[in-house]
Amino acid sequence: MNSTRSSLQPLRTDLRTNLPTDLPTHLPPLGLIAGNGQLPLLVARGAKAAGRRVVAVGLRDQFDAALPALCDEFSQAGWLRMGKWIRLLRRAGVHEAVMVGGVSKRRMHDPLKLLRQIPDLRALWLWYRRLRHDRRNAAVLAAVADELANSGVTLMDSTTYIQEHLATLGVMGTVTPSAAQQADIAFGWPIISQVCELDVGQSIAVRDRDTIAVEAVEGTDAMIDRASTLCRSRGWTLLKTSSGNHDRRADVPTVGVATIERLAKAGGTCLALGVGRVILIEKPLVIAAANKLGVAVVGVA
Image 1 (tube, rainbow, N blue to C red):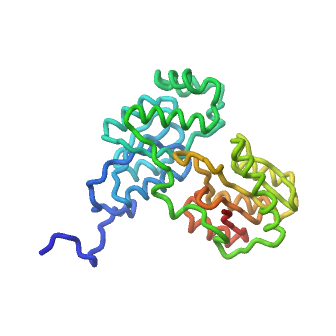
Image 2: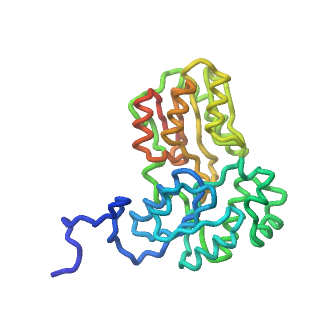
């Protein structure tokens, strides 16, 4: 008989992760440089489902505790120990990698960071050559990507294996934005676009065509909390996206169930997201939470 798998024969799965265990093994391993949050978990699952072996380097004190079980190989390294990232990936035969999750900006601005995370010589040299005078997200990512490429590891688009979790055009749930909220989106979208182009932040809060709050280094969650103190009335809109030339190799904006819950508690009832530019962490769960809490989720082109 032909040795090709019958179309009726189910894939065997790992009972711990519910991921296929007998996909083709000819694909090269994928490196995963994992920071905080749930996004590295989604990428690991997506890559495994696509038949890639996942070799992960978890950034110390950042990665989710559930990540190691989803990977074929897992190691830890400090977020300033770039030389170690590269050695671990190259030793495992990795030539392509995804970097997701990031590092808390509060930790990056910690005055004791050099004691908590001693940088290696490669990181120090990169800082001296490229980042002494420009530490914006885009500059840091470009410098890291170039350093990895020079060592034989190419950073990929971080959304490659999670396309089904990206924001799509129009209303994504069962709650429709009101006429006032549609007007707020039309008013706020040029503003958030400029905020992103200036690399200030990725979110703003709007009500009655007035800007309530703009995200900066504190992040979206803290901005939502701040907006709730500035706008006591319910019904305001949160807009979140990235710039048109945003480097998708890392730091793609995300929202999750916790974002929806926080937004609803703070009085926000509409969430406008850039189509293809924002990741919904576990998208079905995010939409279900929004439907339950009466939050309209809208994709804006």
